[in-house]
Length: 197
Image 1 (cartoon, rainbow, N blue to C red):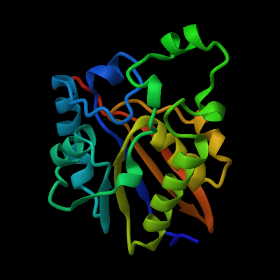
Image 2 (cartoon, rainbow, N blue to C red):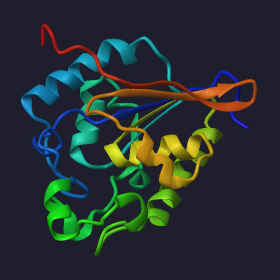
Image 3 (tube, rainbow, N blue to C red):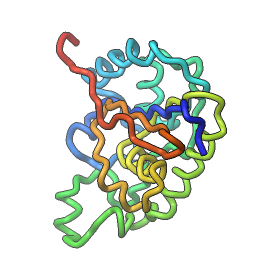
Image 4 (cartoon, one colour):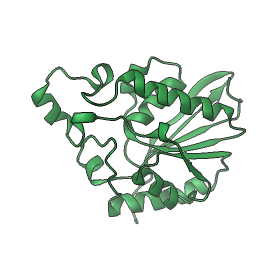
């Protein structure tokens, strides 16, 4: 059971050209857009007000650069379990393009051809949660859209397929925690305003 005061802050990397355009971005190392860089810079003030015992990031540049611009680059460790879903032959395609070829396709039940199955991604997310629970204090994670959704579902002890219910925008801050011994969702999909950036 997590410590009552422990929180896990889950940050989806800031905007890339592919996230902006709705393209499935698994293992392709797509950089942040200029707007994404501004979004990541804007996280620094908010994250800087907190203290974290552990900071982990996906090793892909869009996540590590978000972490660096958010001011935690020196504390950050990379963890391959935070990588995005491996979309296999669907890499770089939009959902509309995929459904043209396979109208019945559903990521949360079918996985991806030549990529990962739901159980593969869930196993990686579970390993991240175990690492979070072992930390002595709050944890900050930098990851990706579908992996963030999977982490939320498993943190709440829901079936892995319920990750479909937790949409997450690029650059969003999500806070998981506990209350009265129950795992809870304190905040979901909060994005700092881009005005003035």
